Image 1: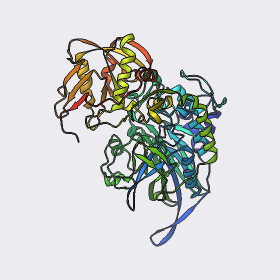
Image 2: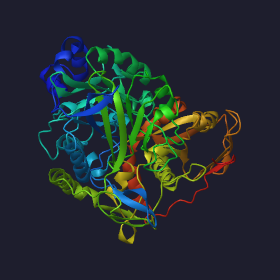
Image 3: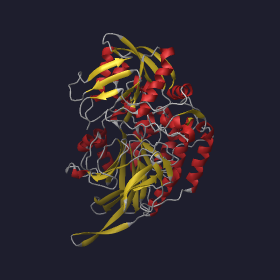
Length: 603
């Protein structure tokens, strides 16, 4: 267990308050925990110098994927592209153990969303098994991501501190009656309470070496500033998220004063690249992390990012020469782990070399909609780590009764992959299910579903069987549904708001009785046309009842207009509505796209 966590639990107040109040007096002494010393010779001016080699093992967006997630990473083989089956907590544990064995000076860190939006075997048990798995793996720090607030800050604090207090509709401690909490430290430098304290420790410092030959690495942990727009408001009451770069820059002098030689940022925000796996060119790098990187103090050495679920490793100095950060992201679901090596000169206290590689966590072969994905010798194979494998099996067994219950049938797989207009068949189906659940009781006339709330493809079993576990993987959040009244003009403004953020396409997926077209080349307020409900043009002055999740109703995904409503009705949980739709329409077929029409040229 790392020293920060031990110390926090010895105090009386919450982790963030304890650390905030005690930092000035206590941290210089507390962060002198020592690791084994491994030095390498360097050369400066013809004379040998000493450097300490440090291994940082990083990942992000694990999202409670204990079992292999049936995903692959593509490599170039001698006869063309080869898909490598990847992921699974037991394989992930083995991959990390092998990396640890390469250097006694190591640390394991995560850039957020370790939990939340998780599959059934973790989410059903409030992600306690994922925390237990990460304790076995030996994680040191995790920067809180937006999905870690899905069940609210009190439940997140429970995951850190342990215990069985009930903060959700689901009961805690169903399998393990004494939940110990995380043995690692959550970090949340820009998650600030009303009294100015942070919800969790803003940073941690890890010391490597012995005697005078020591190097200290400071890790600042942050979630994205926009978290308030993408989680339920009730769960983050009384806290706000400050600017990421400004927060980090203000903390760097404190870290330096406490002896930090290396500065690393763990940030739950990220980018996108066009480069394939293994290409470290930064090709096509875009995204919300770029302005953050450009505003960071140039003395930062390493930025470990997440949120976008993308696979990249690159020297950001190729993009902005004044910010030569090593930038990494390990994709999603434990399919990759980032192996980072840095060397720090003991005389200058500066990083003299740094490298990173995203290593594939080759797991188990599986069947997919596009064919079987087999193990390959193109990537290292890992045996499942026994203790983590036993934990995963125990919770899988506990969830079997729920997961295997048949809820209906489909005529074939239903995809969540969007077409050029942004429409996805599975999102359409969910909107239909929500309208069916809300039409009679809540008076809903139409429904909208957000793309980001569709978390998995619908892949049926033999004979088209759909299980509760399959539905749970698609909608794991447990969002309550609601119906609200809006004018036709507000609905026009809502659809236009889909395109208000440059570079972002957040399409709202409508129920089957809705049609609309959009043209992004037109000015704001004129981008929506041919908007109909039940075949009739939307009257801008009329009132309409709209069904949606409470997440959207709170203005989630940036749709602030959905907070401007009247006459709200609270309906069932989204998963209940989806299950009821399957029961009433057995078998179901994938909706045919055509509800949304794009008039400009798709990129």
